Image (cartoon, rainbow, N blue to C red; front, side, top):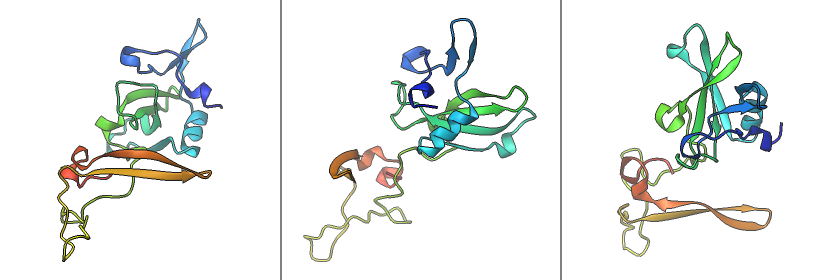
Length: 167
């Protein structure tokens, strides 16, 4: 399995993959357990059980990163149900709607405490008053191989719960 082999070769509406591979004569789902394991090993996907929504054919789901789809948020995941009878993954929907997995590149950070109050403090004020989240922007950098690169940025207003949602 290589990264190139995991990109669906056919593209459907709005640049989104239709998740079908072909050799010109036959079509088959591109996602296999082997490719799911590759996605998981590279922190680009996850799996889980369907629990109370399981049926006789579908008991497991897998979600994988699909960066080539221009119609979705950059870190959304394409989710599939695994058909135990046919032995194949069937496209189920986008994780932004299904909400079965945490956002792929979500950081375990928030700008608020458990009560929904801003925890950002203004050190220039005498008693370190809280900073209103409206209009606040953020930038996160990562240091890799001696290079500092910007990898996540935005405004608090773009986050859920009035700026208190996860980054």
